[in-house]
Length: 521
Ligand code: MN
Image (cartoon, rainbow, N blue to C red; front, side, top):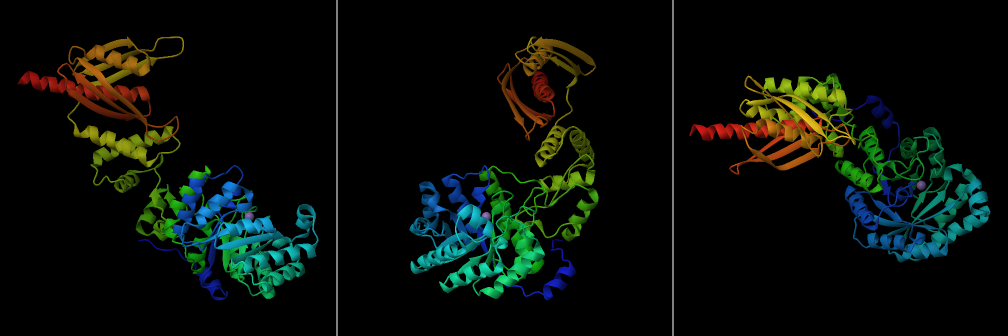
């Protein structure tokens, strides 16, 4: 059963709050998100991200800062012309050249900003309070006179005294500004302070309020929610919480908390969150920590048998909401403590119905063995082990089996292998050299079985199932007998040489069996 886990304490407190029915979401992945140190999106990537974020259903997409550069101007203009459902926003300082550039992109909305805190006025702007206020007013006037929707941000608002902040906000409101943003630019608010701050701001102006919170203390999401509790009805976010320094509030966390903890709607289609997160992680080359909320790899993963078992019966035992709500899948992580039941369940999700119980024990033992020597066992590993054991079990009993293999290799010696095979009651030994350890082992085997099956190696294919030097090696070998018949066999092991030897022996067994059949005729 899949359901949302509910705490009655939330419901109790929500009843006492004056919450908005709906919250606007402005995504600034392409602007603040791209200001993440070390991140730079290519033009095509920006276009793809804009489409993905639009598909997600956000209300506004801040596409860039056009005055920055000609390429940035061009991409904002292109995104503005894509016919997206979301309004495309261009950022501009309160300066004429910035505003002209932003408006020339033919975007839907201009976001103009100026610092209002004393520390920014002194060290960043070198301007007086009245000069800053005049700039803000003339910028908003210019944007509104040109017929654009206007969002105004008082940068570093949370470090601006309320009397001056109020003066500026009232002045831009008088110019007809459409939205006011009061960012916590340096990320220094705590949630109770944010609640107080937004309550005060709401007393000063009637214009809808956006918040833009930075995550320097890991409080960007909490502060955004606190702001909504106090009457803000727009939240600025980024995919994966990207952004300057420690980033912004993450769209995934803000939206899911609004929907399921507060019962507030947004236009976001939450089932697309994981796919969009993965796309942005790929293009930003900033992979998420596995325990990142909502969209991280482990957000719905269970390793403990107790949790896994309970979740299978009712997901809300140990999951906040059904994984499918955000485009994830609940999964059981296979580790060295996994039992037969967990492996059976995992195999089922991977498409292996009704595995023979005896083979299941073999698969479980093999996977546990693998988990001892490898940090993480992936689904692909489980599939490879299952295929190996199930596939081989279908075949007739092998005639020849590998008893011992030893190889020597290095930069000062010719790779040499010695192999011991068992063929019925016979012990067959051979040794050979080769260009590498796999080649040497293969030569040794061909030398031993030469009388039984004259074979040539036609193809050798090695694949690492997952990343890492401890990955399983998946070897497929194709051999040909003297009559031109080909035999293909595959084996999976942690060791490349052993996987190669096993695959070759499996193919040789097929060739020998075929020869016996021919002789009987
Ligand atoms: Mn920012």
